[in-house]
Length: 79
Image (cartoon, rainbow, N blue to C red):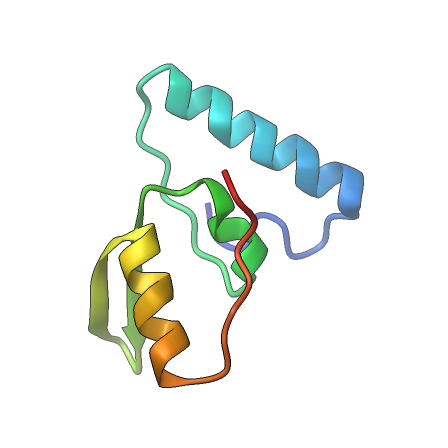
């Protein structure tokens, strides 16, 4: 999904998150492209791209920690 929450209000954003969680529970792989840190709350892994190249890839908590060391901390809601 490419920026699936870009034009959603809060209710739509919650519905999208619930849908992605349900797909995850069913064993589906869901790939989401997003610029919103809040979208990362329920993901397992993050692939961070910069200028088209892989900058980091790993478990969500590891990548968030790495980003928080480099710049202003980002806030990701708890699962």
